[in-house]
Every structure is written in C-alpha cells, then in structure tokens.
Length: 294
Image (cartoon, rainbow, N blue to C red; front, side):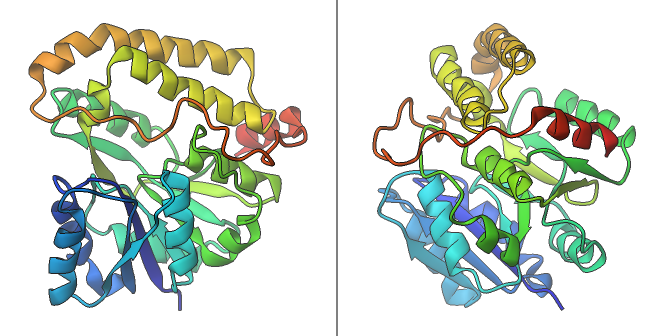
C-alpha cells in the first residue's frame, strides 16, 4: 500500500501555517507524515509547527538555510519517507478528501507519476467568481486527464519519480520550480494527471502583487519554459495578456482585499548556479501532440 508524506516549504508564514497544518491534520488517517521545511523564517513559523508537533508527532520541522523554494522543496522531498510525496504551499488549505483522493489515484493508476487538481481562492474579493469559473471549466473536462505541468500548491508525486528526476531539476531561483519539475518529468517519459477530487484553496494574496513585481513573476514562467526549449510566441502572448489583466484588476483588488500582499517566490535573476545551463531541445511537436491526444 502507498503511504503519503506531505511537504510544506515555508518562509515567514506564521499568518497561514496554523490553518494549513490543521487542514492536513484533519485528514491524518491518510497521511504518514507532514514535513514543514523552514527556509530561514524570522517570524513565528517554527513555533507554530512546534506547537502542532507536540500534539501530533507526525508533524516534522526541517530547516533549509539556502534561500529559495527550490532548495526547501528538494530538502523536504529528500527527507520524505512515504512512497507518495505531496507538496502544497503554506497558504494552501487542502479540501475534504484530498489525501484519500491522492492515495486512491496512485493505487489505481500506475501509468502516472504525479497528480494535481483544481485550485480555488479564499480571502479574495474574486473568490466566488473564480470558483464558479474553475467549477465550470472542470465540469467540462474528464475526471482524469493528462496535463503538461502542475502547480506546486497542489501536487503529489511518486517518490520513485522524484528520485528519477532529482538530478535533472534546476537549482535556479529565477525559475518556477514546479514547472521545471513537471517538464523534467516529461523529459524522462513520466506523465502528470489532473483529477477533480483533489481540490485545494489558496490565498488570494498573489493577486495583490504590484504590477512591476508581477511582471518579473510572469517573466520567470517564460524563462522556465525557455530553459527547456519549449517557449513559443503563443506562450509569450498568453503571458503578456496575463500581465495586462493583472495590471487592470490590481487597483480594485488592492482596495477590496482583506489579506496582505507578499513578494512572490522567484528571484529576478540568478547567477548562483553557473553550471545549470539551458537544456537540450525537446521535440515541441511531440510535446504538443501528447497534450492534444490526452
């Protein structure tokens, strides 16, 4: 039988960590361990984790001194003992049945290496319309389908797949580590599924990001696909549209929101990894064909 370890990278997440852990602990019957990776927090993040650990020994606090989500994720994944490794953000609230859905999927579908699911918002003025949009688009899709990439705030991977991709993932902090891992899995012939039963809610604080900072965040998306030689003009147009829409709604979002903004977890540039060069070209026609076939 599969066992599930859940990894939560965290940097100064005292405002969200308690609720994140409580949502996971409500499903502890299906979770082997919860690993919080403290990435140099200066607030009460560690104290909150320690409080939960006193009551629930399945909660573990691990430290990673090298700043960056990718380093915290790698440390947590390497520390995990379960055959399945879940990965969420510290502001993620897993939905009812999330852990059971993850285990059930991997027990049934040996042809997939990783899985993700629908993502809703909370503490956002746009939470209700966004939920309606996600539910509408989700209903029009199969219960299980192949996707090219998955978001790190709602993700699970077989430990064997992580070990296969471990030496391929980039250590650059100016890339999106979740997209990079997804594309590394694709390179070695491993597939990611999206299932309807694996629902989470995440904070709407990302929508409060100032447009200039958000531009760097979106540029990191393009940079990650380009790192795998999969960037295209179509992708560039989609990302430009995303930046425009964010800039348009940002003033009203800032007025209506009750949560605080937060610097997004990618750096503007990274010269610390000099040996991490762009990867060899992937056949984009094969990649697009696989996506359309599934």
